[in-house]
Length: 458
Image 1 (tube, rainbow, N blue to C red):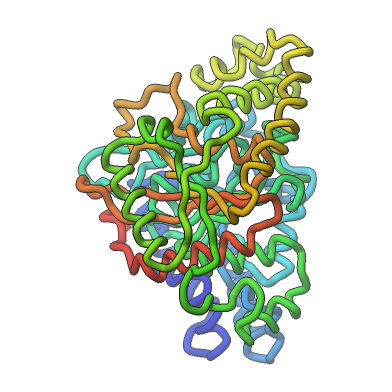
Image 2 (spheres, one colour; image 1 turned 120 degrees about the vertical axis):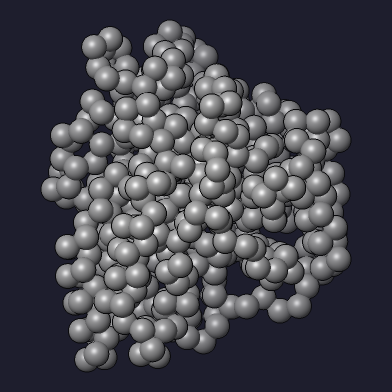
């Protein structure tokens, strides 16, 4: 399996491996696995090889940009790269050529990253299971015998990272679509604070709620990628990385002095027994590390927060893509079209009411969190279901949409495997711009949890 981001950074810096070596590992793994997993929409093999050679030559003359120099990465296929096709997961947009390069992509490239290609997505990012009727559904790598969903809409990014085809990838999260594939595929996903990272050059779903973020195999890898995405100088990032400062500092000791809000009793009934067992084990682990854990009741139940979020999503999705959704002859995923149709008939007053309610509810939640550093919930209520069992009218976003609605930051971290061998995860949910705290909490928990096995397809 190709190496993780921070391991590659260390090996490139020491000279024990080159970006060219790493790229060959990546492309060999893609060739070996993607015929089964279908994570990639397009692979830029020749261009990626040339970029890796250039990165290797720069290292040889001491022109290292920073810790992301030479790191292979992937973009969800709703992120624009000038001159490249960006389908946004839609067969109707197969020929859509990007006019510009998204700022987040430019930042990764400016930091020395090597773009390998685009990963598959739910059509127009409107769905949580990761399915795509026309362009193909990526396969969750944790089941070698039966086909399970990866979670979406950043489905291809989740599968590509979890299976080891790529060290890290970009996803987007409007109601959980970084965290859900992270949960179902057993990797780390960071939902960034609304407005913190630029969304220009990303095909919009909901301009109010859309947030880009990293998917990676460890919290440290997600932290490094996030630091690059914020636009900080690669020199400053490199200085911090070399000296163990900033987002890369290894947290010392335990979680004494940290207070976490856990699920109120009534919310536990929404969680499957296997995931609830993992969640309670995580609570015990964090308590052993010194954290103070106490139940916290949200201003509205998560189910109501979920539905309020979708009011905003459907209204804005129809604003951006209504002409396409309304075209009965367009080759659209029938389930995506069904999700979008309520936006056509939504009254303006209902949309405005939802926008006003989110501000009020956010203030209420922040007041309830007085004295609490972050919330802790399961990321998804269930492990990955079989593709054949998926109810497209339902969603795995029960606990994730609230983070978007209330403009919070959130980090999904795997907890371990359920008895059937599928990943479960928790999310640390913090106030807006609390990413550094969440990454520290995730690192401490990840260290205490210990290593996880690799998926059977990978």
